[in-house]
Image 1 (cartoon, rainbow, N blue to C red):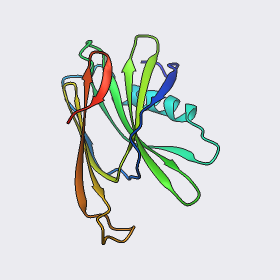
Image 2: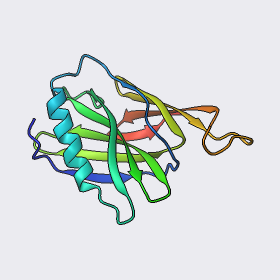
Image 3: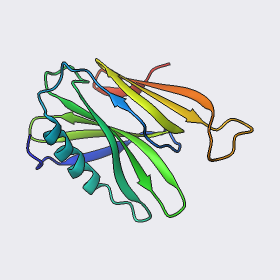
Length: 155
């Protein structure tokens, strides 16, 4: 894959803060090599330039999320502001000559992301009622699925 791919972002309504720790993915979808995935990620990050924040890639997983036989990239990245940060998840779907980007905000500090087929599972820690801001303790899990051409939150 060349780094000449463009990315467009569609944002969903989930909100929150986060920091990344670990990502794992399916070994079945490795047609896009690590260097190619890093080039796609870098191109996407460069396209994300909010006025008050700096985008920064955290981790990525190569997986065929939409089961079309092409390797997609699941990216966890952060927007770093002067006194705040926001963790984001973006699914970069390989469309041949371009990538389609679907993004959502992640709540809490990201502890891990797993990709299993068309399912993306994000484990986070969020603030409990007596937690100091530095030290969230409540475990939460967000499960997203690729269904009928859309990335949806599973209940």
